[in-house]
Amino acid sequence: MLARRASAFARSFATVVDNAGVKVAAVDNGQPTTAVTFLVKAGSRYEPKPGVAHTLKNFAFKSTAKRSALGTVRESELYGGVLSASLSREYLALTSEFLRGDESFFVDLMSSFLTSGKFQRHEFHEYVLPVVEAESIAASQNHATHALELAHSLAFRSGLGSSLFASPHSHVSLDDVKEFAARAFSKGNIAVLGTGIDSAALSQLVEKALAGASVGNVAAESKPSTYFGGETRVESHGGPETVFIGFGAAGPADPALAILSAHLSPQPSVKWSQGLSPISAAIPQGTSVQPVLVPYSDATLFGLLVQGSSAAGVKEAAKVVTSALKESTGLKGDALKTAVAKAKFTAASSLDGRDGILGALSTKVFANSDASIEATLASIDKVDATAFSKSVAAITKAKPTFVAIGSVHALPFADEVGL
Amino acid sequence: MNVLGPSLAPYIRSSRTLKKYVTPVAHWYADLMGYRKMGLKYDDLQVEESSQVQRALGRLTPQETYHRSYRFKIASDCDLHHKPLPKEQWSKPEDDKRYLQPHILNVLKEEEERFTWDTMTVQRK
Image (cartoon, rainbow over all chains, first blue to last red; front, side, top):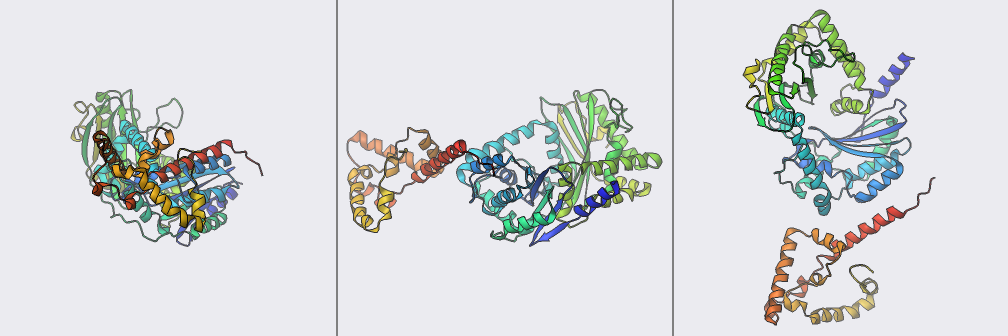
């Protein structure tokens, strides 16, 4: 039974069809609901001016030639669907989740934004800008988010370094957004991902929805990423003391980093226990360490986010993290096997959820690479002790990305924690 | 009746003959109203004490808002002096465009749509 399931999953997962320039991938595991995501290469790395991508994201589901913003919301409410838009550094994802059978309406609703969004000036001022501002302020007050934003800008500078959020001082005009949308919403930049829907049915709907549209054919351009690294310190109050220690590398995602992340993660496998990670036993009370692994199409950022209530505790934990990171080059034997198993489980279990499937597909669908879980697991399995230590040594040899947010007079500098 | 007041214009425009005869009279009447002598445009006379018109005013571009308040300033100056502007400064009929009416119509259409959605009856198929 399990084998049959697995093969069905593999078969349905590997279907990335190129449908008149638009890539369509769908997986049907028999879920009671369907989700369709239009993935557009309109992330912040492609934006011509800071904040444009964030503003465009908030324009999603506003007035189109077919229906007004109110009509969009009310009509999808009648169908019981949920609409959402999310932005990553590479992609803008427009998602709708709905009951099986309503796919033609929701595909039409989302594609009408891509093909005939009106971008009205009053909607820009009345609905879009207030939300953009609120989201930016909320993000800047969350130390973890802020640290990752700063880490990206240090690590990659331009391109992937550009912030997901419009700063309060960015002057994004409606024309900027319109121009960016016109360039981004072209067939080569769009991929459609579905869960709980048949691939053939979805590609038929997408073909119909994007057929009559005057969708241009301009490829989104961004120069290839390079890793730089650096150090920054930001004085801030009202949140946990935060330190981010990260390393990055240009090039495709390295499976060794998934193993490193699994090895260092202090998340215990059993409730109320400490976990086997070299970090979890050594960090002081009241501090937390969280591994962060963000793979992009042509670069990866790996790091550990250390947070705590006191700067002294965070400094202590950051020292522990750095030494654990350095010692992990010598990982071998059973410890490596444990980490590999943990990494494989994390990769596989992420595909249970809709977000996980979307994340796994989104990194692969544009590159046309094998998105099946077997390929991912095989690539993790292939890493042995020598390959692992080589990969870890290579990434830690680069200049570290070090971000400190909070009481900067007490938080450590990069050289004080042993970097 | 909405904030724009009653209007026969759509009916008159729909008939070619009526339009032909009424248009010159309309232009003559607009000139006779005298607002152009104060440097104003027709939409400056729109009653703005209503939420719909206030929303429409918020949708003008900054440039339009600036010109609008500048015209008001000129007009109140004329009022103080109890005399119209010199003839070369009157608003020209070709500049007398309805800059506010489309925004008001949009606001009304949105309110009507909201009302329709609020009061609709859903029929299950």
